[in-house]
Amino acid sequence: MPLAKGSNKAVVSNNIKMLVDEWKESGSIGNSHPKTKRKAVKQAVAIALTKAGKSNKERALKK
Image 1 (cartoon, rainbow, N blue to C red):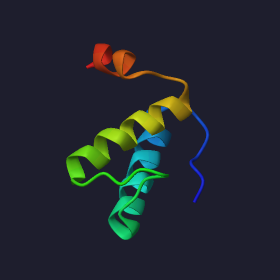
Image 2: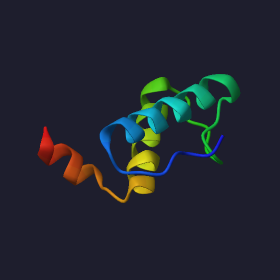
Image 3: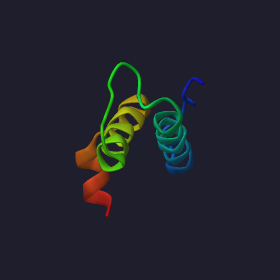
Image 4: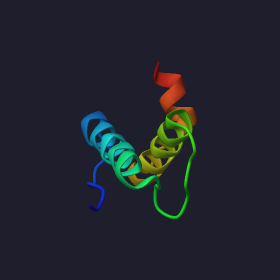
């Protein structure tokens, strides 16, 4: 399923959830195959933030 467009927190969170669910079902996120859930979540965050036009640095500064 394609990722939703948008940069607000709800859209990014939903995209992360969709990517992690995809990993649980198929064992892959896109072309990569993260072995652990932790690595899958980390990669899903990076993909979702890239899609939203944000970076992990911006996300960390807001915390």
